[in-house]
Length: 330
Image 1 (cartoon, rainbow, N blue to C red):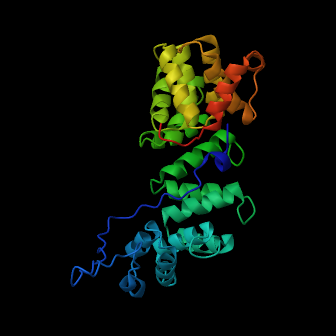
Image 2 (cartoon, rainbow, N blue to C red):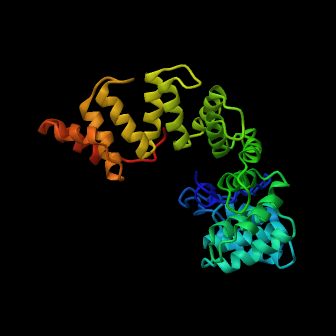
Image 3 (cartoon, rainbow, N blue to C red):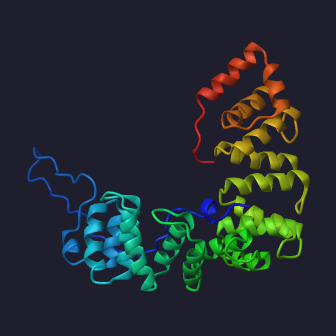
């Protein structure tokens, strides 16, 4: 089971209110010979830079006007505005608009966290859990996760759950982990759904329930979480907690494989080789296996399949592989 360092999302989930931005005014031509003047790209709100608010600073950040966002956030942060301090920490951490500086990120996150901002508390917890620019200190990370969780921060609940499953800084407690994951699952947080599904499947911290496990895993898979797509496909293929359907299982594996998941690619190759859920197709089997193999996953039976290909089949596999690209809409 992965700990909070590898499982948690790296990006802050910064929520801002809707803000009506005034569009750039087009300059109308005075005559037919003078073309209209056009504005190239987003325009900096000079008034906002003089009199910033947290909303204008975040709006500039979301529009990609990072230097303007930095200027606005700095003015507010130096006056003690916690949301602006959090934004300044995010800007320094990611090095957008200014050179990356983990020490400055920690400085501003700490100020905002102490002021009670849950996003800063969560960010500081992640930094301490990972040891980014500072010593790893999961005990302190736990404290900041708890502070953010007390303010209903979903990711903080998730990371606390991982700490309880890991059993490093706290006694391993799957029941408590399940409770924390349930908070995120109720809010359709994909990683929480996935991990809670595993607990139900294994009967750890909760009563074993294959149907509940499959339901949770399906909800996580529906949100394009690759590891959940693979696990859900396996559940469907075996009929664990859900009706057995090899064709449907193959479709879920295809979805994950197209997204670049090597495990899904290898398993899908096996289905094509055996004709389970799909028509037997040695070229498709070899194609998907070649992708998984390139990422370090090997399988003796599929190696034998590759060796048995004709020159024509091998050429077909190479042609498909040459045009392969991951990350397209599934």
